[in-house]
Length: 223
Image (cartoon, rainbow, N blue to C red; front, top):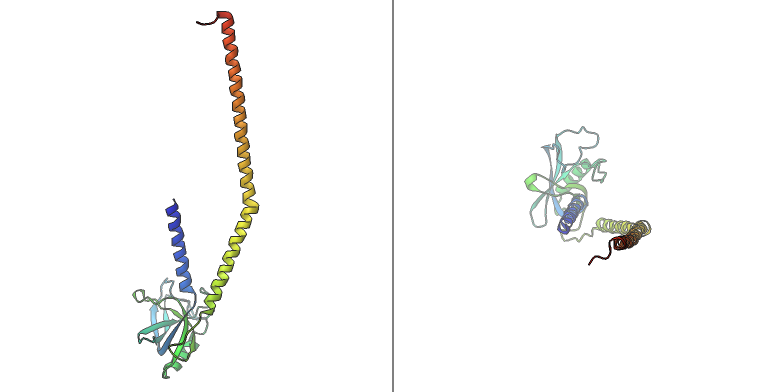
């Protein structure tokens, strides 16, 4: 049972970590090399955002892509879709402006930028991270501090601590007294049952003694 409990806890923890890793913003230092628009069969995949604001939601639609190059020379492709009012709540409505910005940057030399995005790049399943913001930087060696994620996890830790604290207070003030009362009642019932048992045994002993005395008086002592 203990192993099952640990296994369920580990699975839940892994799912939470994967959810946060996919949803929270990440930043890459890349060089923009171009943009592209492709007709994609979206279907019911969870790894595609909503269509651009003001357009009709269909299973097949044009999707904007931003082509980039990592500092090690490897290519990297981002999708550029509006998140609209859906999840994750980035409230992105400017995918067209980001495409124009990327096209302008692609015409410049050494156009190193910090691309803020969420999601994963999985080639096997044709999954692309979604660009949220593009910001020019001095070069490929710029060190970026993830302030948003730091503040987010600090707030998450504070909320978790507050919830655990409230649960403990509730347990001490509400649950523990009830459990103590139940335990006390059970002890009293046990004591009463013990007293009743002693009384019953005493009465049974008296009855047996009376029966023996009656037989002895009428039939004499058995030898």
